[in-house]
Image (cartoon, rainbow, N blue to C red):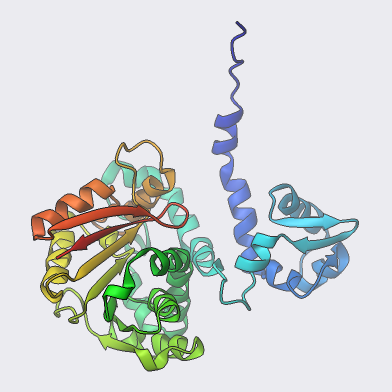
Length: 337
């Protein structure tokens, strides 16, 4: 029986993966997909629109073709169905916000991953003396970009949560750490009987309210200003925490879960959605990489398995829990009080 030939192809593909990653991130930064959403363009026209040097343009565009991000028919370039839907800034389905943040911040910080692995310390703005979140929340333009990025990260899962969770049994909900309001808006759009809201720091209010207004659900969504470490959570039938718990160490995670439990009525529910690591810790590479990103970004944050979260919920007092897959690498853990 012939043996499989062993080659270094997979190793080299992964080792040079940053080449393709940065090519996509630069295309998003340049607005290439938004330009192509207006119609196909030949190389000369696209080069002019993006203000690129002629030396770079041909290989850049054709690399995106080879990577499956752009189509070329004859001499004209066009979006693929995926990039047309998800990388056109003019569409509400745009997910490029999180990629813009990855390009502007995370790409360079991940260059220090080895140092983070050796020290266990964050490798972001902390190392330059800047208080990232302090500076972010003080700058309305940077803040709005960050909040949009969080919508990009969560909107796919939000739509699945809106379908999978038994919302007919409930009347109210609150998304804790709501950012722009992407999750709350998707749930409100799908379930007209619900009234809900989002909790975040006071400076987020105008961004949340403008987004809810633009999506036509402002009358059923209320913004709750507050710091979820310092203030009680709003009383609701359902509380949602999306991409929140992984920012914090275990003691802080448990404190937030207890706060959620206290804010819920009997038979209320908590939904935690994250890039859940599979229980066997072998398959969800994105979940592990997100946890390494928490190493880069936070003093104590880490991602976790569904089994981990179910055990924490049980310790807090939730009587029933379950895990369900969502979009892509994401999953949700639901706890019922």
